[in-house]
Image 1 (cartoon, rainbow, N blue to C red):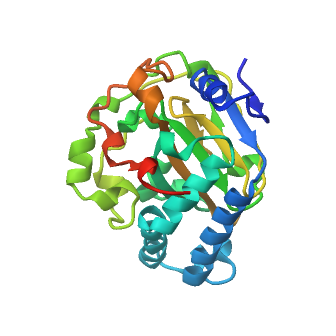
Image 2: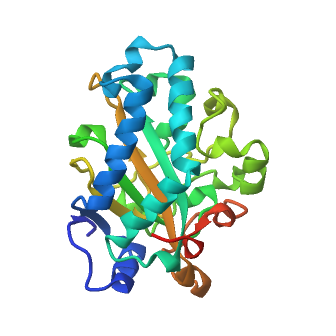
Length: 282
């Protein structure tokens, strides 16, 4: 029975194997993950002021999107944030020279955001692998604030090895980035939630158990990109901000090690655009 665990395995290979088998690890903050939180909060405060969680109600959707877009672009592209990712993974036993990563993304879940049609894809239950990521994908999530369970997301572990009706076949990575590379992280097109094709579950579904969690700022949540999960709708009166990135151990990918593929039919490979950390220092 999958539940959220709080300790690494004895070595990194065993940790990766456990993640591919469905383990979900919620681990304490490290100096590197705390630095990532501080860096992201500094960017948010520069753009939004000293209370970024409360400011969305005072801005138009267009203005808020532009400000958030500038932050997303910096986190995703700047070398200093790439180097920070490497320090985050090294702190938990991953060898930076053995991995590639899809860079930092700022996630924004607004108060009553589920009522905005433009934000609908944020709430689609999905597997990250449906977006043309490898089965060896490890998702890494870091909250910027202490959060109750009602403001995070839920896993449906009974679906880890069970197919879910979905339209992942509509997602072609090459076509996706051909429309504009910035669409990957949402820094350019406010209308993308209406126009772009985001894969999700389709038809009637009984996902089984829902496993949720609360968390503290800077914690490291690691899970397989093949986990079926869903962002919670909330009306907490504040915006939820978090960071995440995607990690692939390159030898595992070359050797075919990873989570089972029970229903992913997406096309192309996002791995082509991952940062190869072997070319960088941590």
